Image (cartoon, rainbow, N blue to C red; front, side):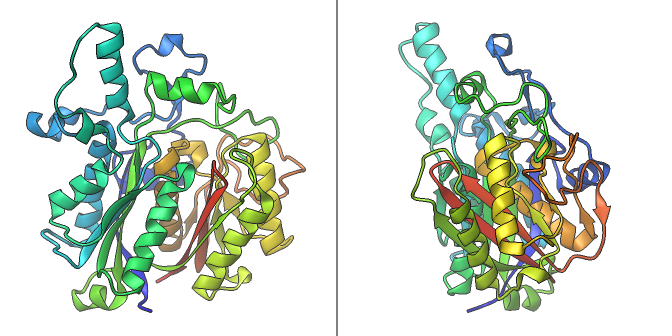
Amino acid sequence: MRRVVVTGLGTVNALATDVPGTFDAFRMGRSGIGPLTVRDADRLTIRIGAEVRDWRPETRFSPAELSLYDRVTQYALVAGAEAMGMAGLSGPLGPRAGVIMGTAAGGIQTWEDSYRAVFVEGKTRVPPLVVPRLMHNAAASHLSIRHGIGGPVLSTATACASANHAMGLALQQIRHGVADVMLAGGSEAMLCFGGVKAWESLRVLAPDACRPFSAGRKGLVIGDGAGVLVFEAEEHAHARGARILAEVAGFGMTADAADIVAPNVDGAVRAMRAALADAGMRPREVGYINAHGTGTLLNDRSESLAILDVFGPEAPPVSSTKSMHGHAIGATGALEAIACVLALTERLIPPTVGFQAADPECPLDVVPNKARTGEISAALSNAFAFGGLNAVLAFRKA
């Protein structure tokens, strides 16, 4: 099997609309969580989120394009362009390239606007391009069209593990010779009235801040954004003189087969061990874990037990960047994969901000509130989703 490397990164999220700005926020421990500005926010019980602030799509896309692009697609295209530029690639990439993107909700804003038009405003029809705007594969398809990518193109929808599953499948496409280059990651734009209202009913949203692993944590905070990574066969990257950022060393996925919402320690343990085995990596080689770390009582406790099971009492530093960019649901794994690659290339472990006090049920080094510098040779990125679906990626320093 061929070795697979990362040659490009791109992102839009609540911290910044590019990778350098996001890295600066990680370095400074700055949170992008704040008051929601979505329509009808005053009717919500939870009024905070990690919004992409001051997003002006009219400055980035033509009116004809905007008739086709929900925000979930807009974010993906901007992140994809940055990743392509960093990788030194330009289209058309042809049939030896592919795209796999994760999303949990797809074009949910388009759904909401259409329902408002019909049920609230009394209109009898909606715009003709509603279906291609809201479909889950829209972001992947438009990345394919934009960059002339004619190989394997699809989307994954596995809740909070969507992006990790997308990247894991992209890794496998290259390893097995189906493609030489893959754009992989996730995009989400769930911060609208209906999206937040649905999450409110689960009673897992924090009213004030996201404080993963901290005593007194109250829940997660929804975020929007996209992350796109360029995965490439190592020999292909070398042949064109590309800068290699990191190796995508391993991938593990499991199912709890237990409960639709409650996390399961065994499933998480098996996923981490599968990723390590796939990478040919020993636990002691891992210098950083980007945790799923949602900030809910049950998830953080369960993930802590799983990490201790795999790594023992000397577990490596663990942080949850969701405390800064929010829980971007189907895109969150891509944002966290970017954090792992930056940890390897920039020698910086991002912090878990908002941490107030240690929880004895989460006895981990969670890098509280301030980033930490140091040499890291390998990192894991965890994603444990509703439905009991777990996906873990292992990255190794180039």
